[in-house]
Length: 356
Image (cartoon, rainbow, N blue to C red; front, side, top):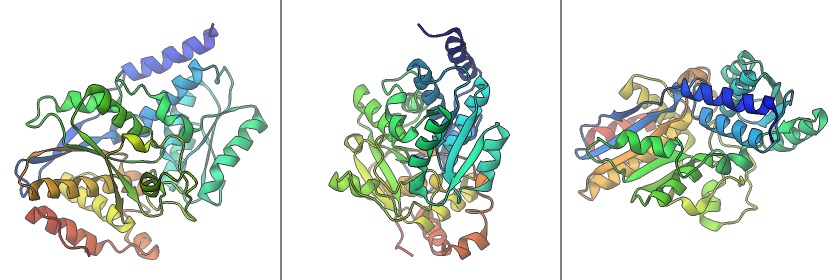
């Protein structure tokens, strides 16, 4: 039987959920694509500003119900930022200490948000060091390593229960093409793609799932080869998605297609989206939009109609010193000008423009 503290903790998380509205789904108007609609689900409007708010809630409930977190337990996570921000929020809600283990390259804005919620940031030099260091810290302080990369695919109920897939279909129900041809997402843990892919099959929807993968991530290579030992000598340049190793939560069998996206294209697409919708999003949203736009071109080229749904994973205010800083882009070798021209041409003519 759970302790009174655990029972109260679960109720506090549920009350927080009841106070939260669903995230907005809005169409991206592209006149050159008649009969093809692209929708963006804006996950940046969660209380902690990203898609990872859903995951953090699920992970805390999963850990509480499994008896892994008790009163006073120090919670530790390996994260490049957004998951840590959201977990710090829930840790503060429950009065628990929180430590995020992350690469030194994580944006300063995310580090500041973790601190705002009372969390600590523990830095490592390389992205592949976060796992072992988080495990070490958990042993050292007798805490709980949340381990999003293992538990993301199982902490969320993929059959429904207000998950993101169910939310998408509820919001699409009155649209011209209510059952999307495609849902496009990136993968960090793989939890979101696993939840959506399983839900599509469980509900019998004809919708297909496309996962977009940035450069230097091994997910697409694993999807093609099923070689679980694959690693990359460097991490993805797009915060929040792509991994240098195959994560346990990544489930390739529920994915219908994967697409590789150049890093400069992701950043350019995020900047282009700002011009189209008047709001800034992070680089991973640019990766998503790249995939959605390419699929829209394919549908139009076949003379077909249909809808595509993709995700805005977090807001651009976290990337003012990176994605939205021209000097940073230049210093890091990201030439987005040719890609911006490509997106402008593609959206004006309705066909996929030649590569820059």
